[in-house]
Amino acid sequence: MPKISARGVRLPASPIRKLAPYADAAKREGVKVYHLNIGQPDLPTPQKALDALKHVTRTTLEYSPSDGYRPLREQLVRYYGRFGITLSQDQTIVTTGGSEALLFTFLSCLDPGDEIIMVEPGYANYLSFAVTAGVTVKTVTSRIENGFSLPPVEDFEAAITPRTRAILICNPNNPTGYLYSEQELFRLRDIVRDHDLYLISDEVYREFRYTDEPYLSALHLEGIEQNVILVDSVSKRYSECGIRIGNVVTRNRDIHDTIMKFCQARLSPPLLGQIVAEASFEGTEEYQKACFEEYLARRDFFIKGLNEIPGVYSPMPRGAFYTVASLPVDDAETFCRWLLTDFRWEGETVMMAPCAGFYNNPEIGKRQVRLAYVLKKEDLARALTILRHALEAYQNR
Image (cartoon, rainbow, N blue to C red):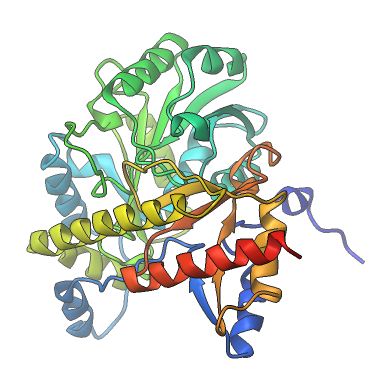
């Protein structure tokens, strides 16, 4: 029988989705499963965006330009301008979700065998993109004990080798919900400048920052303008995960033109998704304000409830809609699987993402889970009750 590729063997299974078959089996038995494992918002997509899809008048659903329709890129330029970021429409490229933006950035900035430094825990698919691109991941570890703040500069310096080409951050962070401070970003800027590295900044959760501090993007950092590549997406901002529209921003012309070659090879980003995304940027300010306030209320309610469960600890996230919590179990993945296969509370259970897969060294996250507070408060309350009873039952087996 022909062999599977070595790349395919090395590719990690998603900690967010790997337990899905167990959840599906539970649902077939009539069990209600509360999904805290995945950042799929339950808030509605803006009506304006849905109306744009309903009223498509095209008689042919054609290819778009490889970098996306110009009107959408112009909308993106105006959007970033609201945050004090000055761009031109030829400095952003529309991609098939933020995932493609990241993958094409890896392929454009890094050769096989090159190294990229990531803060762990980090979004699990970063590791998958690195394997796909043949890139070696070096990690610096943030700790739950100090709320997952940026690791010390010395940790980054120790990780840098002659093969290091880039540092990747997510701000606000998935999976921890941490929001990097101005001082932390300035420290990163200095490292990037001193070692002439790329800074790849995933900022898809920009709208969900629960602080009064001024917003600082990697694109604001002076002195490394040619080193910064920003990755973005409308998925969470407008509850449009399924339209698969993201974008990549860079002022570095060589990187822009290289990413464009990969975009041309895949032909074009989704036509219908671009129509929906373009309609979402204007006239949705009240929608975004309501979404922000809802997630803030969910955060406060959910984190308080988690920390009231004996043995559970979660720091207070300052952004996004995730948290990493430590549980009083020996192996969080075993516990998460048991929740789906063996445990029922009044015919219901909870699905969570074991955190080992968000670390390059899975042992560090062995007793942790990532939780997404993307459900309405009534469902979050029910999920907390189920988790409390499940932990009691698990410890008394």
